[in-house]
Length: 271
Picture 1 (tube, one colour):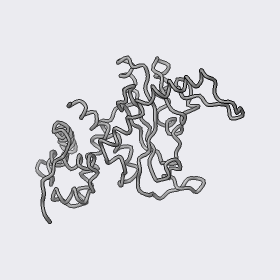
Picture 2: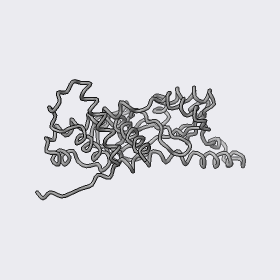
Picture 3: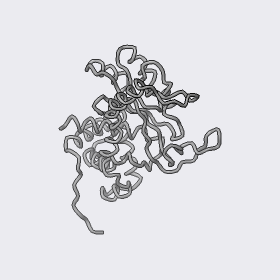
Picture 4: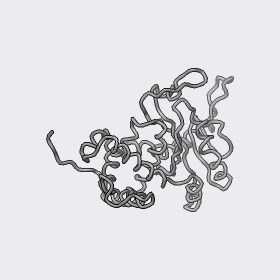
């Protein structure tokens, strides 16, 4: 093999931020000093290479001089430590009200994954998304009006509809926020979500005539305001490429996305 020099395109303060979290975790679980193959900083580099470059764990372990099993253990530990710092939805919405935001944006995104065993009640593949035509996990996220990602839910299988996933993870808190003056904007996938969740208007299925002019104007305005918030998922996927396709257990997709959100916030704060 031929060694070569590489550069990790992540700000050093972000690496140090994760290294401090990993060091604190080691102290918490009572890891003896010097007993690990990698120190907190080198483990942080391994984890960030996976998030940023979607490098295979075998290659990460080889470059670090550790076994593949240890590489997976270090990676999962880093994901868990970061995901444990993900913001709570109620706290996020309270902060939005304190900041005087006019609204938040609710949307769903699909994270591609490998094929997984499991079927629905109808015998279909549980993790197969008929919308995207591939296996994936469904995540719900909340974004600020300017498109900054604020919160990400736990994962649901790709066959689960956005509205059903939102009812399980987000809508109860959003109803309370709407009652306190913070409405939510969403797309047509959330029609029927309830009071305080503003969605586009659709013509009645039994009426062939198009929407009235004021209703079309309402939809255009809603689409224009909501579009900025919907870029949040794309921004996370482009910065943290591990979210473009997850080869770990799909049940970990929620934790991976929440960890990416914590890293994204740390990156933004270090600018």
